[in-house]
Image (tube, rainbow, N blue to C red; front, side, top):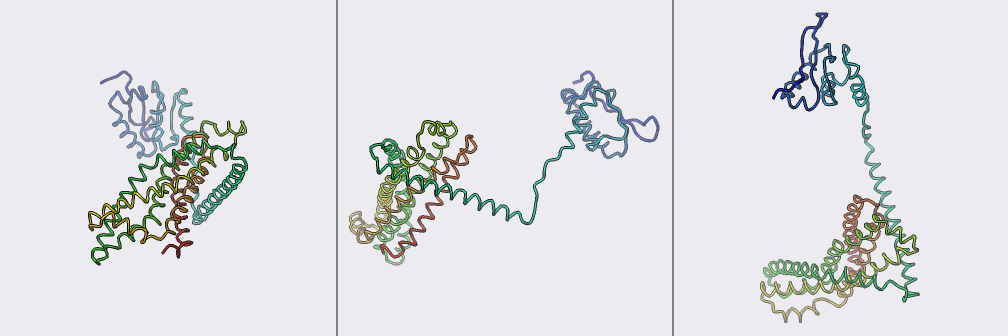
Amino acid sequence: MQIDNAPILTIQKSASGAGQSVMASGVWQVHALTASGKLKGINRSLAALKKGGTLEWDLTEVDSIDHIGAQMFWNAWGKKRPAQLKLDPRQEELFARIEKATEISMPRPRTSALNWIIVLGQGLLTFFEHLHGFVELIGRLVQDLGRFVRRPNTGPWREISANIYHSGFQALGITALVGFLIGVVLSYLSAQQLRQFGGDVYLVDILGMAVIRELGPLLAAILVAGRSGSSITAQLGVMRVNEELDAMLVMGISHGYRLIMPKVIALGIAMPLLVVWTDAMALLGGAASAKLELGLSFRYFLQKLPDAVPMANYTIGLLKGMTFGMLIALVSCHFGLRIKPNTESLGRGTTTSVVTSITVVILADAVFAIIFSGVGF
């Protein structure tokens, strides 16, 4: 396709005869460059001229030129004006803008052998900042609990009930499914090993201790952290984005009394119940697997279980559930209140909340294991 005033690049001897002269003519705009079908050829010619040494450039015959065409010439000149250049006065402003933009340099990140110290220091400052905020949140919760105990008739009962329903009752399905499957897997793998040594009867002991003392509370806490913890953080974050938290302060409504305390109390109540539910489903799955794999009857499993697991382990499991639930609620509220009024902070805060909640739960479980190392065996 041929168009009028197509871009043309002419190379000839200079008037002085000492070198070459490059003359451009036609329309050097993006539509003309692409429609003429010469764009690749012109780019190759300009690239070859870039290596050709000192040249005389004449752009006075160019009818019109835009930033695309001007940038092609600028790149061919090595991003600086050639010594011998003829421009039309209308082109001076365009090339002056390109020249000015070329002079702007982006700041380079400073590299140093001590950068790791800076990163470590920033990490420690961030950690202690979060720790300070978390301790402050606990102190505010204690004050709100004291107010609630003194005047229970003015307490947020509806909020507590709603949070028990959302965080506890609605989590029964996923905790039952995961608990049952974990019980099946643990029972199957244990049966494979015990069968080699004739210790089939000890399967109940292994399942009972592992599920009731460790796996039940930990599984329930991890599932609640991923399900309810993220929901709490997202809820508070959306309230921050929509400026509802600021509106509550203007109306004199305490965030801690109406938002944080009900969630902590609700998870403190719901989590031990979820632990019992998860334990039951895991033991049911283990009993079903033991029946199929080792031929142990359900009746034998239920009769052996109370003797295999001392009562102290049930108490430890319930205490773990209550502690994990309150920690999940506190961590989720902590990160929810720190979300800034933008969607990026909302997503990042929710992710950080879930990861931190699970980490805190595992650390708390390790502390329980150390404290109660000699109890329940």
